[in-house]
Amino acid sequence: QKSLPAMPSTGETDKATAKELKRLRSLPENRVCPNCLKEDGLGFGSVCVAFGTFICSDCKSAHQSFSHRCKSVQMSNWTMDEVKALDEQNGGGNSAAKRKYLARLKETDTRPKEDSSLEAKKRFIERAYVSLRWLAEPGEEATASPSSPATSEAPLNEEAKIEKKRSGSRSRKSSRSE
Image: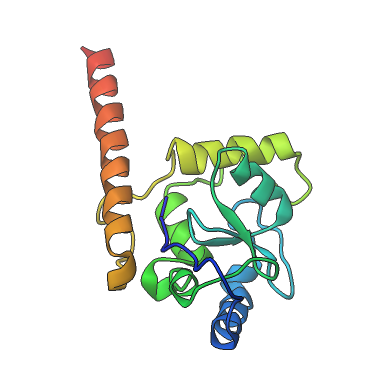
């Protein structure tokens, strides 16, 4: 999960930040929920900040059930650093998340549809973002531009967690085969 800089305690989203958020929200890849593939012509009103994705309201609820931080595009205050983290060149956005967290998802894997139950969406979110079942192997994911200095520490922490999960699952697998 990415951690983003704290929001200032006062004020509203400035016009330049709101304009950039609107631009990112309306990109074609960000108008399709990366989890259930629901489409929205204007772009979704929710962002899963933890994974930098624009998501439908049902998948927002599913993410929140795992305490993944989500924000409203229109009702929340946003900093430019938070919005920049949603840009694909900084590792954010739906395409980047699919390349990283859903890289090994197969056609035969169960994926929720737009009209699937909330429970089905929760199961998918758990497998994709908690258990990291379909996570890209190191080097498998297309490399993104380096993070901005304000957020450069977060990806390293996330990568360390992912590597720890990977090595733990490898050692469990090898002990089973002995």
